[in-house]
Image 1 (cartoon, rainbow, N blue to C red):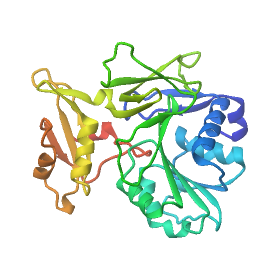
Image 2: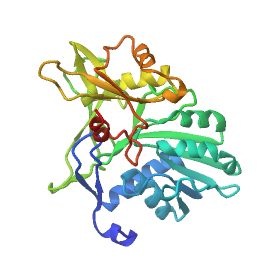
Image 3: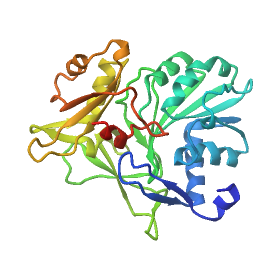
Image 4: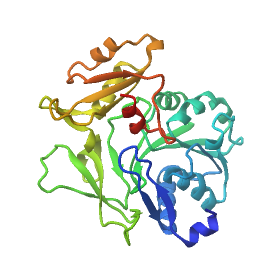
Length: 331
């Protein structure tokens, strides 16, 4: 779709189905412009050029790899098309890098070429930031500032937080000013609640005449203030194993902390009428000396996974999320 056409009609995106049923979503040009303006002013600041690793068929890449450069009339390098091609900012330039997980290792390796820039801001979205992101932020601060954005195709950006050099992924998220957090009046104080929001940037689902009034994101959160929260995990990732609650996001977190050289993903298994709920851990890392026994040892304190499946690599979508369908097909 050309830029001119995009301004005349709704912009179409499609969810991948990595966390739910694939579906088509539509956003109006003023919603795109509003999000670029809001996040651009709040997190990015003045930019002279953009390096974009996020495919623009996805909302994140479209917003900051197409709409932001177009609105600000700045040069953009679409690094997603050939991510291994070296790229660098002009000397003295203020550079924005639009990141998905695979971009960080490439950015870390090519960082010397960006050290001539006046400033570098990195926006990260779509999946958990990898270890290379924290390594680069520690190495390159204060020239590099990085921010994580929590959002989805259905909602646009919901909240943000700095990508901290200490790698503390438990830091709280701050909602963007135009996002309202709908609290459960009967929810237990301090207990996990499902994140429900209102926003003028909610997308219109296919077959509906207008965007919904509110959206249930599927994220479990613990509220830490009127407009702040910590993520606990996905509502669909909260399962019970032999009567014990297990947050699979915390399983992933513990494996990441205790086995930093191993790539692991925990997924709920289809419920069995006799065995009940359970989960599997998919992993790759034997070449680094990790064995199945190490995964079990790393999960002491959690109910044991029903299956531990070794993979040559963890299949992922093009925005870096684990490809749930491909993983479950490997069982």
